[in-house]
Length: 411
Image (cartoon, rainbow, N blue to C red; front, side, top):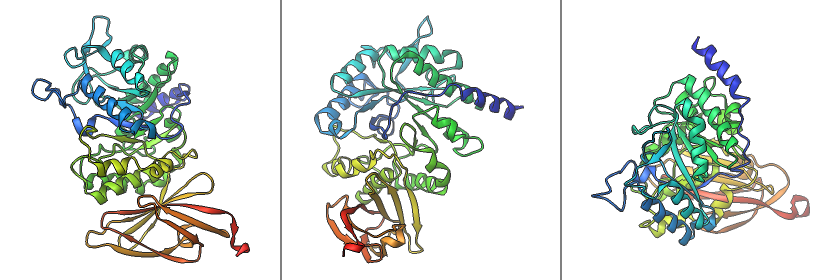
C-alpha cells in the first residue's frame, strides 16, 4: 500500500512542475553550514554564531573581495535561524540573533548586488530541532519567503516520511511559483530516498527542483570528499543525464579554506566538483581565508568551465590500475575539460596517455591550457602521446580546445 500511495503522489507531482527559468548554470555562493554549523552562542562567540551579523559580514566580503564579480552571488542561511511560529503560524527568526528580521537582511544583501538563500525542512522539525514546514504550512511558508524577498530555498527532509516528501517537495515547487517571485529551489528529496531509482525519479526531480542533494552530507575531511566522489562515479550513468541547465546534482559544499584538506586535496575538490557541473557553494570564513585558498576558489578559467552554458555533467572515463583516474566534461565551442586525478599517496606520478585514449576523435589539432598553472600546450593531436605529472591526492586539469581553421589535412 505504501508503494501505491507514493506512486500516486508522484503522478500528482508531475502536474506541479517547477517553471522558474532559474539557475541555467550551477549556482555559486557561500553557505553557512559546514564552517559555522549550529553555533547559536552569540554571548560567548558573537563573531561566529548564526546571526544576521555573520551573514552581513560574509555578504560584505563577497562584494568587496572579488567573489561577487566572479559569480559567487548567493549568501545562504542554513539551519538554526528560526525562532518560532507566531500566533498566525508564520515563521519568525530568532529575535536575539536576527533582531531586524530576514526582510532587512535580504535588503542588505540585495544592496550589494547579491542574493539571499534560506533554509527550511519538510517535516515537523528541522534537522537541528527548529520548527519545520509540515504539508499544511507549505503555501504559507512559500509566501513568507517571497514577502521577505528571499532568492533561494533549501528544503531539507529530516523528520519526514516518503509520502510527505512525495507530496511536499512538488507542492513547495508549485507554491514558490505561485508567489510570483523567482526563488531557486534546492531539494534534499533524493538524499532521503537513497539517491537512486526506483525510489528516486530523476525526470520528475528535474521538473521539481533546481538542484538537489543526492547523497550524504560532506564533512571537513578528504575521506568524506572521496566517499562522495566514489558514489557519484559509481552511479554516473544514472546521475549524469539528470543534470543540465536549471537542474543540477549537488555533491554538497566546497571545503576549501577550512581545516581538513591539504593544498593538493583542495585543488582536487575544486577541479572534480567543476568537472561534475556541481554548484559551487563555499562554506568557510571569508574574513580569514588564506590567499592560497582564494587562488583556488577564484580561478577564472575554473569558473568559466563550471559555468559552461551547455551544462553537461562530466564523467570518469578511465580508471587505471596505478591509481590514476581521468574525468572528461564536454564544453561549448567544441572544448573539453580534462581532470587527471591521482589517488596515490606516495609520490608524484608521471602519467602518459594520448587524446585518442581519452575519447577524442577527428582530425583536429588542439591546444590545452593548464587550469591551475596557466601553461599552454600547443599542437596536440589525437595520436600523440603526452605526459602529465600528478601529485599525490592531486590533479592536473586541462581546458582543451581545437585550434580554429587547423586540422590534420592542413599539416
